[in-house]
Structure formats: C-alpha cells, structure tokens
Image (cartoon, rainbow, N blue to C red):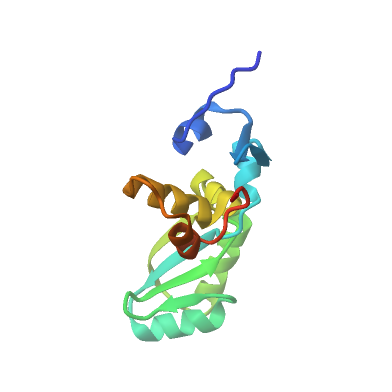
Length: 151
C-alpha cells in the first residue's frame, strides 16, 4: 500500500516516509529513502572544541581539511560520520597527544537536502512574497536571483 503525505515538516517526513520525493516548481529534483537523500549531500563534519590555542593549532596541522575558529577554540573537520572515519580522526589526535574537550558529529539532514536541491532562490522568493502585498519581481530577482518559471 502506498500513502502519499505532503508536508513541509521534514523531521516528520524523515520519521514517517519510506521514500521521499522532493519537488521544485512541479519538477522532481530528488527521490529516495531519507538515508539515501542525506548521503547525496556533502557537509557532514566533526566539530571539536580544544582546551587552548596551542592544541587548536596542532590539531589543525594533524587533521586534513580542518577549519579553525580560534575565538571559540573550535575545529570543524569534514567527515562522512562513519565509525571508521571517527576512529581515524581520534587515532590521529591521540597519536599527536592532543586532548579534545568536546566532540560533536553533524551529519546532513533533510533540511540540508532541501537547501541543496531547491536552493536559496526559492526560499528568498517565498520570504519576499510573504512580506509584501504585491512583490516587485525585479526586486525579488535582484535579491535571490532569477527563477526558472519567470515570465
């Protein structure tokens, strides 16, 4: 049996749907299980908070592709979120005798899927349309870019 659920609550879709279709202006732009859709999106990362600036500097040298935020003593490291990737990251830090205060893992969610497949232009158009009684198409286009259904 197939039940069609239309929703803007992506957490609800993630919990209830076996398969998800993402539409943009009536066009199918992505389809799959929630997990398949999330795996299509880059952006998973591990966020580390280190004890001091020296630990942050050393960790940045040890971890490839890491981006530091010195003010927060945080390091963001690209990761697919797998146990093997996390184990490798921790092994490299341990091998360099770098202590981590906190660790958080971010994996893409359905909001990330929506943003990557629909883009900011759709979100920008909705924002502009809600806040004006008659949106000025030229102003909306300047703010969020041309839409492919513009007439």
